[in-house]
Each structure stands twice: as structure tokens, then as C-alpha cells.
Length: 329
Image (cartoon, rainbow, N blue to C red; front, side, top):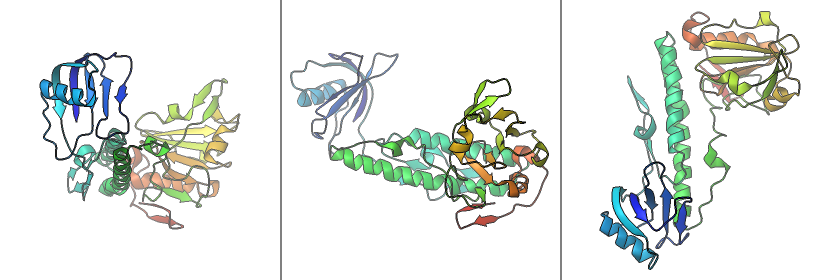
């Protein structure tokens, strides 16, 4: 049961939880901001015919917390429901795309539904923008390729947490933060040569602290912010890099570059050697990681996805497989 209620008898400075671990008596009351409401959450039997009126919820609370003196004044919204975990068979049929709750429904026990839905939208959003600006329609096929496995994993995690909650032993670990998710097997992930440590193609791009020409600190996350692609070069010469322009920002790191890696933060975090290039997608994931000897592959990659709407001119999509792990269109 979930219900937003006007309630007397509890302070609003904390989330109140009672009878934790007892699925027949457990209750929690979360103070909601701005409206003076509490949200009641409580497990109920699947076969229960719940009375969601103010009187019914009052009786429900009194039965689980006799003599506590909590008074339900009114109910603004209430629902009694059973958990579902469902995943759409397809995320795209022709010109129709599914994302968010239309693509995956899940128990709320893990709390990853909103994050997964927002990531769906961002993933599809930058690809739609690229195709509308002249990129290949095949780019849109990578939306389901990348996002459906993420949703399947999230559903498995949320369902497992629900089962643990039913047993009164739900503990959330690092996996619920979703910061370790990525697309290492995506056809948009290019890695030449194949890497075995540090940041890999398909990983979420990490932050690092750089130093500007004037000595000021600058975070990589600040450079990534926005709908553009970002090319990070460590020690490569300017004449060997694609030109920055619409949809692509290029940043050279080194003694004669825009920024310096004074503390070695970039090299340590990314495992970058001199001459390495890292191309970060508009959604903050590493699209390509190539060595100095393979720098020309960045221009090929950008042409294949028409970054920035034909930024580097048109070409036919190309395919690359490296060690069976990182591939790309």
C-alpha cells in the first residue's frame, strides 16, 4: 500500500519506520515536502481487499500500531498494488520507439526506474538528433542494442531486492547506484588496440582534474557537459587531430596544449599513455579509445556516425571487431 495522507501524531523531521522486518506489521511514514503530507508505505497480503478511505487507513494503522495515537485526517491519493517486472520485446518498430515505463516496468524496491528511464531518453535523444541532422538511420538501431540489456539487468536487481525485502533482509549495495553500467559490447564502442585496464570503450566517462594555462583547475565533467562529442588528446600534436567544430569539442592535454595533467590525474584515471585519444559521446560514455598509432580511426569513427550533423563529411558506416569485445558500426 502507498498513500499520501494528512496525519497527526508524528514529527516531520524524519522518515518514521515501525516494525522493520515484520512483513505483517511493517509501516513507514515519509514526510513529503511543501504540502504537509506523509506518504504511508506498508506491505499488505496479495489477496487483501484494502479499504483506502481515511477510515480504512486509520483502522489499518491502528491494527499495526495500537495505542500510538496517530490520526488520519484525509487521504489525497492511495493505491494498493502487486509488483510487476516486465520488459518490452522490442524498443523500436519502424518509426515507433519505446522508452522509460513504456519499455520496462519494475518493483520500486531498488529505486533505479527513474535513472534508467532518463538514460533511455538521453541515449535515444542524441541519436535522433544525429540522424535528423543527416546521420545514418542505422544509428537508431543501437538504442535497443544498448538500453534493453541495461533494463533487463535492472529488473533482475529490483526483483531480487523485492524478494529480500519480503524476507526482511534488503540491503542496497554499490550496484544500485548504476555508476558502473556501460556499453562495452556495443557496436558503437571502438578500442584499438584492445585494452585490459583503466577506462575502456563503452564505459561511463570518469572525472579528472586538469590545470588550465593560467593555473586554474578544470574538471573533465565540465568539458563533457552539453550535447556535443568531446575528444581528449594526451600529448598528440594539433595537426594530427580532427578540427573542432559543430558538435565536436577537442581538448589537447600536454605541455603545449590547452590543459596540463600536472598531478597525473588523467593518466592514472584513464590509463592514458602519450598520444592516446579518448572520444566521449554526448551521453557521457566513451565511444572510442585509440592509441597514437591508430589516431586516424577517430576521424573514421566520427564520419561513420555523422557527429554534429556531417561534421567531417559523409561516408559509409564501417564495422570493426577487436578481440570479440569492442565493436562498432
